[in-house]
Length: 210
Image (cartoon, rainbow, N blue to C red; front, side):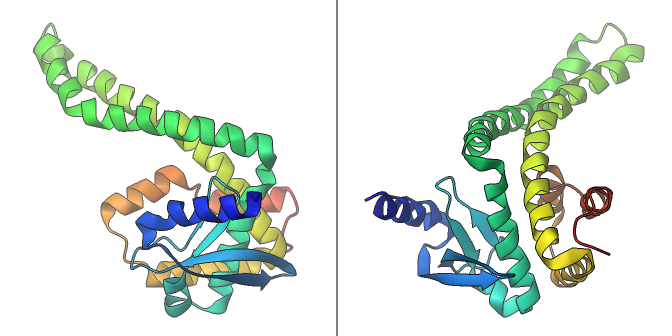
């Protein structure tokens, strides 16, 4: 019963990605999981749903090598590392801080206008602008922190299975094929910690060999 409900919710979750086109077992580095495949032209290669299921984009198999697809699979499996309580807290904080960030971005133009209007003098305008922009940045930090912790755990799990050397080569391949626009690059930087930080943590913790 739970399995059918989980499958149904996953298919509903994948609706905005073109829907589930296929399901099947996928294996990499000795780990096997049921994968829900979707197909669209977006750059999203995989997803870990709120229901504990894995989704992978069939487009990734066409655009990238098997090593990249394996890495994406292992990364999504790695989201399990937070455990039930961790995932529950993540999904409690993620939308909350996400809405706070969205509100800050939407309000930014009005905040900047208000800075000009209420600054007591032209000399103080820069200071008021800094405060206005700082409010939006402050709204970004909790959202980024929640995302970075979640994604870092997933990345470290993938590195523990494929090693740091293969992780670097996978990232090089993805970068070569990437044609992300400016807005997407900004979003990725907010949601995902830098590769250099991930590798530094992996080295410090002795994960993934050389």
